[in-house]
Length: 353
Image (cartoon, rainbow, N blue to C red):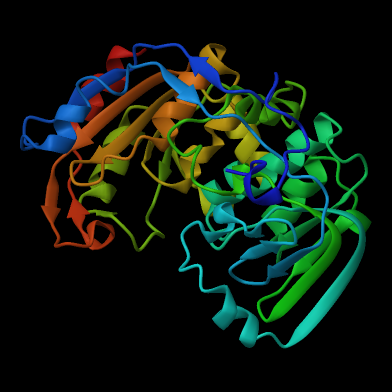
C-alpha cells in the first residue's frame, strides 16, 4: 500500500471518505446447477457472498519525481523505490523494461499516474485506472492535474471525457516510452487490493458519470449480453441459451459493439440483464442500485470469481448468481468450456418477473 514507510507519504490521510469501510452483509440469490460437482470453491460460496467485508483505505501519494514505464506501467518513486501496486499482474522486472526504452518524456507540473499492465480489459480500465481519476477530480486531490494513461481506445477516451477531463490534460504513454513526471502521484487503486473488497467511495464515483435519467432504447428491456466474440471461457451452448432467452422476450447484444454512453444507459435503464462472468459485468457500476435492473451473472464451476458480486454488494443490487457445470478443460480455466443450465436459468428469469 502507498504508505509513509519508505518515504512514500500519503497525500490524503486515511480519513473519510478514504478510510477503510465495513460494507454490511447482504443476501444475493445463489443458484447451483444439479450438474455441478462439490468442491472447496463451491463450499466458499455457501458463506462468502453474503458476508460483510472491510474495504481497505484509499491512498494517493504526495507529488514527487517518478519514472513510469509504458506498457507495464511499472513505476518507481524517488522516495520509496518501486511502487508495489504498479507490479499488479506483471513480473515487476523494471530494470529489463527500462533497458528497452526507446524514448523518455519529461513532464512538468502535477501528474496522476492512472494505468497498469492490464488496462486493455474493461474491468481493469474502469475500476483501477478511471476510478482514481474520478476520485482525485471530485475530491480535489490534485486540482487540475494532468493524467498519465495507456494509449486510449475510443471507448476509454469517451470515459475520460465523461469524467470531465479535457483532452489537453491527458498524456498517453505508449509501450517503449518512459515518462518522467517531476511531480507524479500514484494511488493504491491501481493494484489488486480492491478486487474483492471494493470501496464505497470508488463505487459511488461512477454515479457521477451516469447521465440524467431520460428514455433510452434500453428502457424496460430484458437484455442478454452475449460473449460470442470472446475466446476465453466459452459457453458450449450459448446459441441455445440465446434462443431460449429471446423466446422469453430478451434482446441479445454484444457489449463490444456498444459505445460507452450506450453501456451506461443499458445498465441504468434495462429491466433485467443476463450475462456471463466477464468484463461487461463491470458496467454494474452504472446501475442505480436496488432501483436498477435485476442482474443475473452466469458462472462456471471451475472459475468462481466474486469481483462483480462484491461490487453488487456495495451497490445493493438485485443480484442472482447461477453456477453452471464445466464441460471440458485442463489446468488453464480460461481455455475451458462450460454448459449453461438452461432450465435453471429460465426458471430464475421467470421467477423474477
